[in-house]
Image (cartoon, rainbow, N blue to C red; front, side, top):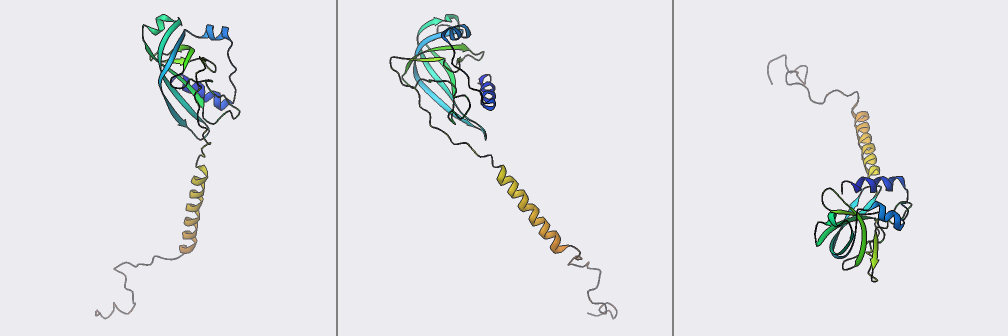
Length: 192
């Protein structure tokens, strides 16, 4: 996730749409091509004030390996990671399209990450097979940053400080020292 997170963020910030890869580009850029079925999946929503992404982890049962047998290393189950723009296609990239849902059968062009999971090529590294379903993501509304509340609080604090300053400026202290008499004639005769 450390490697594709900055790529996804930069792509969204830049507002560029990644065009679909041709079959030749998919084959050239990938080190592994497998057919499999999604055993289970997990989607994590990551939000910032400007963006929102679903990061998806697919637990995939490998059926066949067309390329990259040495990358799979005899594993029957692998983890494939991908992402989807939760704000919809608002002028930026959508992420991976399609993303298979649980139980779906698919082919995936991917690269192995040094930490052991696989990353599907973007944007069209998945090919759904046998009429399998595409994963549906709920659209998320853009989050406000809260900067307005911070500025309003700061302005309110300045207003309170200004009011206190103008209210109490030029006045002497209310309490006098214990050593100073409050009545000028009280200290001369020694009595109370």
